[in-house]
Length: 171
Image (cartoon, rainbow, N blue to C red; front, side, top):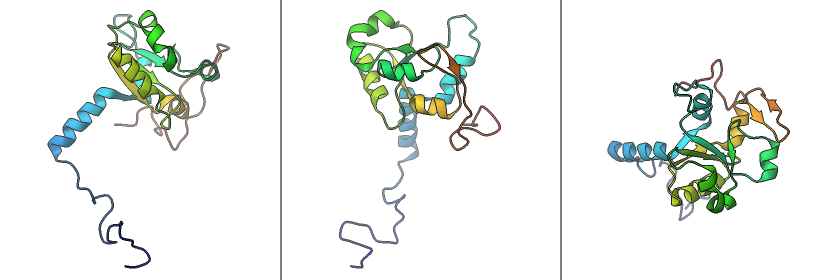
């Protein structure tokens, strides 16, 4: 055994990406179709919120910020409903329409608050998706934010996290 290899590591000639082989195309299609049923992203939410609604009914979903009051006051996605995770059992049915899908978000990819909120809402009978990236990526992509004082800000998109030369990443 060499100094760069121990008993629990794979031999140096095995590609770590392919150490576990990829799933079959059918299994991959099922997995990714399921993932898209549970998740959306910041750009798609922004696009839906900005698009004119033919019926005047809005984007077709309710956007829920699941963070604390002090976090909400720092800045939130315009049009979002503030419903902290802990308050979902007592307030969700009063604040949200069960006939309209819900999209939850929290801080960012390092936080599972949106997933916990989505679970709580699903257990109450709501259709729900999680917005990947949370408010962190909303801000990083340069989208408008409201604050507790009602002001709106639009920053420059972080060029390493947002599409360049377009509002659409092409995906």
